[in-house]
Amino acid sequence: MSIQLHRLCVTGPDREPAELLFAGRSYLVFGPTDTGKSYVLESLRYGLGSSGKPRENQFSAGYTRLALQLKSAAGEELTFFRDLVDGSEAVCDGYHQTPPQGAVPGGKPRKIAVVLAQLCGASEKRILVKAGKREGLAAGDLRHFSLFDEIETLDLKPLVGTDTNLLTRRRASGAVILTGHDDEGLTLVASAAKRASAGGYVEAVDEELAILNARLPKDVSSSNVLEAMAKLDTRIQELQTFLRSNENALNELKRDRLHLQREVRRIANERIALTEARTRFELLREKYSSDLQRLEAVETAASVMDIFAPRPCPLCDTPLVMQSRHVHAENDSFALMAEAARAESQKISHLQQGLASAIRELDDDIESLTVDLREVRKREEENLAEQDALFAKSPGADGVGLSVLATQRTEWALVSRDLDRVDVLVKRREEYSQLAKRKTQTVVRNVAKDAVSVCSRIKALLSEWGVPGVEAVHFDEKNVDILINQRNRISFGKGKRGIFLTAYVVALMEHALQSGNPHLGFVAVDSPVVTYKDPKHGGKGEELLDTTVADRFYEWLAARQEPGQVIVLENEEPSTALLEQISHTEFIGESGGAGRRGFFPS
Image 1 (cartoon, rainbow, N blue to C red):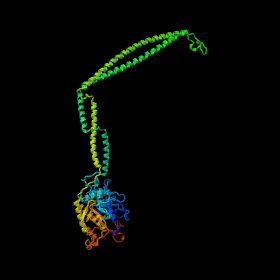
Image 2 (image 1 turned 180 degrees about the vertical axis):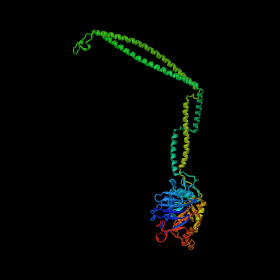
Image 3 (image 1 turned 90 degrees about the vertical axis):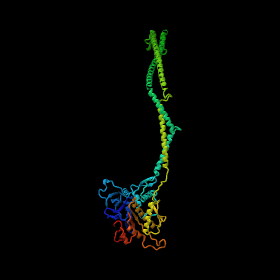
Image 4 (image 1 turned 30 degrees about the vertical axis):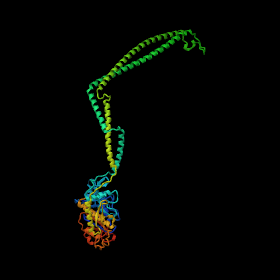
């Protein structure tokens, strides 16, 4: 699965469209510097979903929209639109220069990256992007192995790059393109985020274990707990059976005891009431005694008043009969006072006799209630004794009742639950402790067979292009690059680095398309042969060949029949004879001659 590039078109208000018609063919764009060749490659990358906009130049002002027309392997015609100002995007069916009206049903645009991954067979592939993490093979991964500007073509960096955050992803995506096999079956180690989470979980488990162990009895085990619970269950079952079989007798005793308890309360309350009444009567008797003493004193004082002669006031010498308080006082009044006191004393004496009789009656009643209370309490004790005698025959004869047994059973059940929780936590702690340890992600990919095929094609291409001195080509899995004569590709000079990279990515594309592996279906390389200079002499002192490497490269491009498009952007101009055989566009620059000045119409 792949795509074919049909047309690249950049438009803007009041601007003549800048376009290249590839029509699904391999294509050559050549011309001098500053004619827009780099803008073409950057536009291809941007049109295929990259976030990096093409760099503006002196001719690109006013151009606001990019349209990339392409055809899928199934023959479906599509146009990818990108806004050069705000970066918005749209995917439309068919070939268009500008987005048609109503091109996005319901206002929900399709994403270029998603559509591109589907068209190129990448959407179902899962690759390792970092230790412990898999993601889908993305459009950006496919672009990395298909689009090369001049810097990337001639760079001293291997194809995998030097960004440590992308090394794992580049190796995985390169392996999928090479072999067609993804990392879905790869056993993942824990990612950094999962390791940190596992470490936190271990700490939380340790805290919970400390709490559980602190409240568990010492030297207790699950077997001890289960044994204790089984014994309690047996005792509870026996006690329940006993209670059911003696239910009537127990209920009768309990009813009798309730009746006796009510009698005790009634008698006790009556006894308390009588005792309180007697106490009040005792207070009244004491008051009567006090009144009698007072009346006796009055009677005695009145009886002796007659023997005293009246005398005037010692201060003012006023006679007693002249004083207002004693003006009516007569000697016979004292006799009346004494008589009244005697009469009152007799009345109180009679009341005392009645009160004494009432107190004796209360004492008799209190004594009777005391006897009754003693009798009822004795009967209550006998009732309890009967209940105890009945319970003495039960499994709970040791004094431990059903409620106590149930409480003990609940406590042991809680201990059992805590022990089970401890066992679970210990196992989980071990699992998460292992998960929290940093482990090296082991990656084993079988690329040997496909790598040999690609390397054979690379060697054949370099031979066809006339690059001398290539004796062996091997695949460098670590760098997703190649070794030429056991040397890293990037260890060669600038010219050879470019031509070697071109051979590599072309061979990789052809192999992927022939094997049905994910690939864009084309490669675009800027300056593959511009800096390559033929050696003056061969390795054995032979004379220089008549045809240069550049000429043979263009001959190959003109005659190429293998799958996939090869788009070349170069400064070098092929011979006139070769140009007639190659689909091409020439930019003449500012020389003033007839022809197209650059990518943007002047």
